[in-house]
Amino acid sequence: MADEPSAGSSRRWFVIVVALILIAGLAFAVGRFSTFGTQAAVSSPGTDSPEAGFSRDMQVHHAQAIEMAMEIYRKTDDEELRVLSYDIATGQAGQRGEMYDWLVQWGLPQSGGPMMQWMDAGDSEHAHGGSSADAMTDEEAHAAMGMASAAEIAALKAATGQQADCQFLALMIRHHEGAIPMAEALLELGADPRALEVATAIKNGQTAEIDAMKSIQTRLGCTD
Image (cartoon, rainbow, N blue to C red; front, side, top):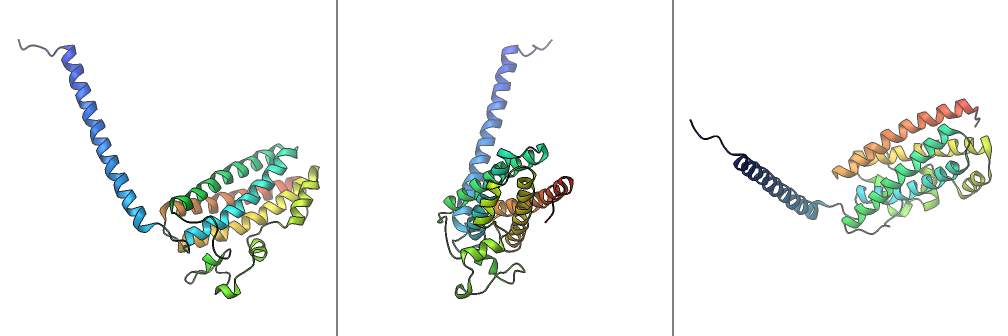
């Protein structure tokens, strides 16, 4: 009768197989990262690209959303609004950090040309102007992006109770409605896969949040 393989031999073969799998996986990963590095060096977005403009402008946009969301999170007594405002603040803080890192990885400055001018590339339906000569000021761009004015932010901070809740909802709905066309413009004009993925998440996520906020407005009896 043939000798049965010993337990020690079986263990040795198992270790060898696992080692071979790990080596093959490492080789595949090295190849993938080498290819990624080469592609990134060749095809990283430039400073005037839609991706760079989107990253810069959306960081500004997100910063105000985080400020407003944290303001209402601290003082609202409405549990549904408290949860939603927390989700907005944390979600947009994460996206803002990622967009900051994109610009670092692409070797680009965190600030660039006039706000929203990147949306004028090609024949985008979301274009907001033409040459740099008729580019919007930052204040005009903020308004076009649905952002709150300094006076509106001050009023939100001074408000309490249901008045504060309703003011926040009106401001954040408008804020989200300004972000969606920016995301749509990047989806139309951009090429970077991760940037397009985030733009899709912003469009879909903020559309859903608008619906949720309108529902809360109805429940609270908010009036425009």
